[in-house]
Image (cartoon, rainbow, N blue to C red; front, side, top):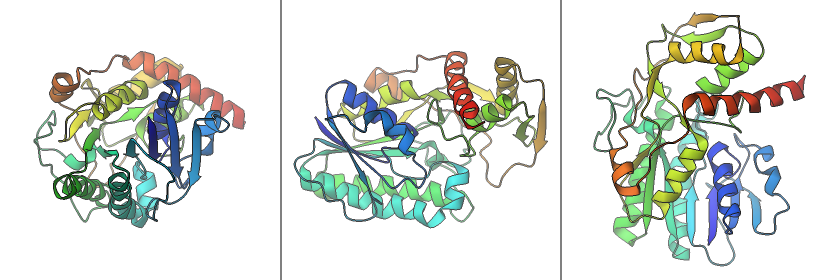
Length: 313
């Protein structure tokens, strides 16, 4: 296959590029490095089946030759990133999705949108199933990301219904692993970075809010299965094992041997109280469920960050 991945230098995008190259596909990655990193695709730079285009995907995408699939993963995805780039986040969800759908249509390619669990907002039901419409504050600080992704889903299905575009939508829940940006503000790199440096872990609020963490290799497998399925409607991909942030912080300190403890800070506006996927559809339709346990995934992630942090010292 010949596959284009927007946001190809991000955490998930770069792992997808690795996966497709490893199985023999040709890959074109597009990224403007707003939040992605050249380091994430350095291992592919000289590969004969890999091509990189540095471009903002809200501009017209001009690709020579055929494409079998377009995977749209370009977007700031952490609170730190989309707070720093609110306009760019909205534009890549709206204009970027429009351009990527248009490219897929022109090439007769399958289109897969990377959506997010943030479309559920601060959910009033848990776990969250795909049938839940969400509880989103459109004018809050998180609204730029939440509404960009909700709009992107609407755009994707509009192209499917109006132009018969072959589309897929994955709703991604908290994902972690090597290539997480250390300074992106999400809980895993925050906690792991602080622990490796021997600092107290900063827990927002009292730590009773929950998250569920999916290791990146499990996520990639789920995305590929969805791409190769016949499912048009959104599918949750994530790990349903829910844990409180306080318990998670204690686990990180235990795994790293960090003795600095935990400090508490005020919670951000609209921070979700619970985040846990109902993966019934992924199990039924895709035959998928996560395999990597939290301790195993965290140990790999801690080793990655330890190397990165020590390399900067």
